[in-house]
Amino acid sequence: MTKAEELASISRKSKKVIIENLDNESYNITNTYVMVNLEGEEYMNFFDKYNSYISTADIPLEFEGVISIDKDDDQFSEDSLDTKIITDKLDEANLEVESTHFYLSRGKKEEVKLMKLESKKLAIFDREYEYLLSLGNEYRIKNTESPLFVLNNEKIKAVIMPVKYICETSIRNKVKKLIA
Image (tube, rainbow, N blue to C red; front, side, top):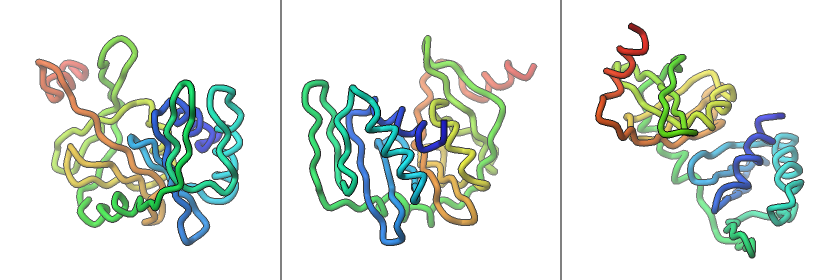
């Protein structure tokens, strides 16, 4: 499965999917947890996979706007969009981030991936979106509570929203136990 098809698979489970056609013949697609920039064939792979599910209404080919997903009635609305509100925050993301090999469990089915900031702090992201890290060769963030930017040759390929860590034990202490 391509990255675009994987995104379609995850997006169809979301309550809202936003598609914005950018000037450079690429599309920003977001479910408000992640945003991915897709071009040409990648977008068509997303489009075809999303439309292949019986459980979701087909996206019209030239669609740009918001899809509100309801079990009984998928609604399409062509609103004016500006995903640049998110991508413009890249200027503030001046900390480099390194992927780790560590994951933490958050309940029975949910896991998070640990990412290490150059400031020696840890940020966590839903493991479901880990595949997006392979879209880039550089990761940047402003702080542990801000979006992670996945860059490829200084171009934003994906944005992943962080998740909050809720536990009595700090992340640092949990990691110490993992590596001990």
